[in-house]
Length: 197
Image (cartoon, rainbow, N blue to C red; front, side):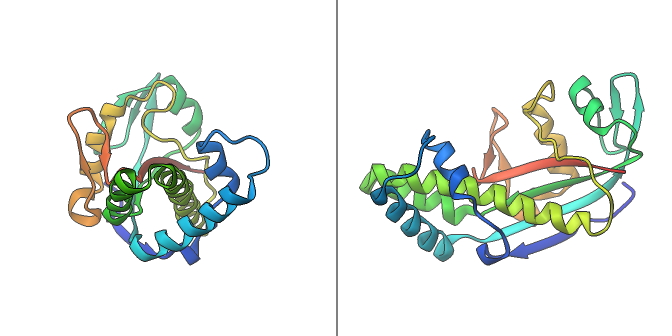
């Protein structure tokens, strides 16, 4: 690796949580009815009590040969990621999470208040996107960046999460673990490549 790991922590006040995005996760394409707006208000307040926003990133060298991308720590073949990173010699790799507290609240609410649990879950999904945007903005202060690209998009397999999380020491740094089917816990976690240049 060309750089060490940098750890970031934050609060929900650091990032913009898009209500429109939360509504999209709920399948709502029109203006939210007043009762749903109230539930989103409640979700925002509840998440403040249980979220523990963390992220870590590193800077990796990148060599592209055909459709093979070599990041030093691991390599893969992907036409989609190659297109995204074309012209880059380095890439940031990052992971970001809301922490396990959000998952615990979703589980608790799913038993006690299923309708609100769905709203809270959607709000959490929008919140982790907002946190990723904040992390991205911090990286953009250092370099000109390409759009971020996550495992599971295009032809980049979810199985790559194992290499990504290992390169970031994410279990120790962020408490992120991986299931046998390559899904992360806490569930409101994201990993991404961000090309430099």
